[in-house]
Length: 166
Image 1: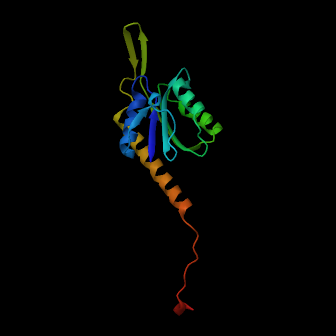
Image 2 (image 1 turned 90 degrees about the vertical axis):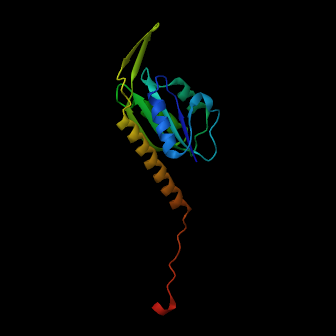
Image 3 (image 1 turned 60 degrees about the vertical axis):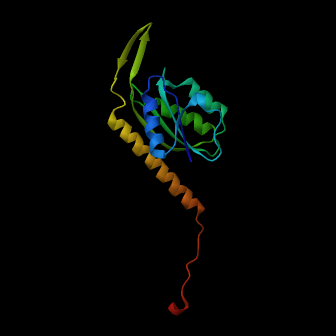
């Protein structure tokens, strides 16, 4: 089971979350609609970059939940293209005992508002290619988590040698 949780102000991160959720056959949920972490789900957590940090709502969500032993894949968008938001989330989550399952970042649009006026930079981001890469990221993380779960469930078994082989 997977949970895709995100914060998005301008819609860039929401587009990535929707693509990943579709790939994982689940729903993307805004962080404000998630009260607590489900016990058995692997988490995909995403945000944009706001004043060189992840969104305050995401930082609060991380602080208020128990991530010990949880597998978390991170994704984010920013105009800078430096992936600072995923680095911040990784740092915060590791301090909470999370296992980072992967990270994905792409450029996002930047929206600046002055009263009723709105200015937008990189309005075309995330692009169709960015969204396809987000789908591939979700698929890759899902597959690697399934392999890891399978490997931890297998027991070492001694091979049975037929008596006729002796």
